[in-house]
Image (cartoon, rainbow, N blue to C red; front, side):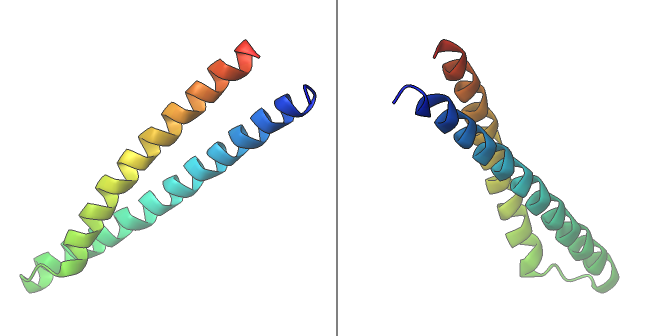
Length: 82
């Protein structure tokens, strides 16, 4: 049972790293949507709903990214204790 613990820590840490990378990719794609919406707003003078939704998604992704970073730090601290 003791030998399975480090493997579980590594699996969880790898999952958090992949999750943080996925959030980074989603953030970049959402930023592209914001830029396109702003350019469209300057061109037409009408702000579409996609811009508002993209801002809401950016705020949510920022919160989730900080959660992932905090969870990774706690996982490292716990793995050093084990």
